[in-house]
Length: 330
Picture 1 (cartoon, one colour):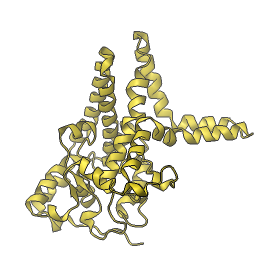
Picture 2 (tube, helix red, strand yellow):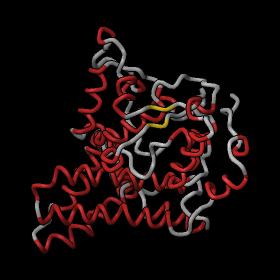
Picture 3 (cartoon, rainbow, N blue to C red):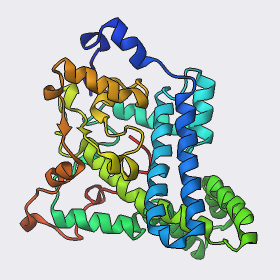
Picture 4 (tube, helix red, strand yellow):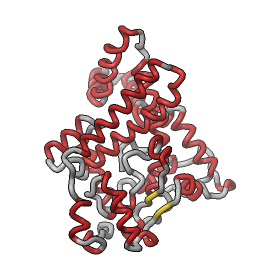
């Protein structure tokens, strides 16, 4: 299968325009990671002071958890820092982690974007779906069902096999190794907060956003980026969608300019903080009408849920059609 068609920066920008777009800042990437963690810690601290703010904190923290994944995604493209050692350290140690494996997987998505060999094609293939189907998916996200299926269902199944006679130690070892970062974060947070009576802080202010708000906004982001894009789409300006995001959407749904996804697929090594400038330059050059764009996330959801209700199949759907959201960032 041939790779997806690519575009050349020189076809759209002069050398003077392209150089600052492609430049990796020595401080902006680290500053964005610091920003994400500061917002998470601040939202958590305010909620410890005023627990009634927990619902708002879940949304803010969940969005920054996605933000950390987006910054890991930038590191996968070597765009978080100009020094590759610093880039990979930041992208692996201060974000969700697993950078090397994610980079290998994700660059395959870019190489074959919306083509048959695209590893993420299953995320966009089911759309459009019915409104009822979309509603069911979002309910599963917000009630923790998606999180359980992604993170724990396989372990529970393996423990079931143990009860049938398989050895327990390899199962427990794999479970601890694969979740070591989560377990370490839980232990440290409980050790710091429990003496002050906040033993519940990690569960309410990290696990709850991760299990509810994060899966939902990850799904919405996936939908906005590639839903309803035809398989084997030949036009590189229409492999992905850019969606206009207002201030509230940038806070709660689309942090760190992730909504500029068409520009990202066109120029995948441009740092996320330079994508708005690339968008403005392309608009000034009259390129925007040829690109796949949407005026809002609500507009994309209308497109993605435009299948007639009479065609809804309820729960009798294949695993691919369930549209289970990957925790990796596209």
